[in-house]
Image (cartoon, rainbow, N blue to C red):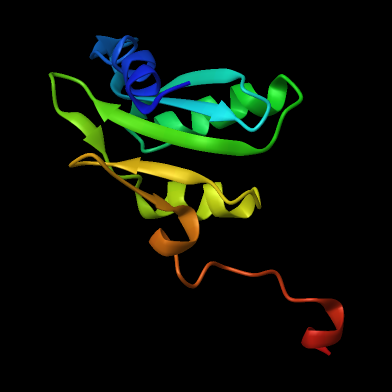
Length: 131
């Protein structure tokens, strides 16, 4: 799958929609392709009390639900023609935790490996390190 096709898959889902009086969705949409070549998508869900989640999280959840877990490339796009947007810090950490050398599409026709976007990710301490 080309970068343009991945971006188009996300753009097809982007678009503000009211879910309820306190929930909106679709302000950002994401698409990812796995190392196996499967496509997964998702949209952000924004709630008045901040319990929502990002589009990247939704796409990753769909991937894991389908039994896959290694992202080759991921992209997020904003609604209203905003185009490709950079992942937030929470998404960068989440993507990094999956462990694959994920390529992230960035604004301006750029891309970077997740490690370059999150040079010092959180690491779980081993029991020996805690003692």
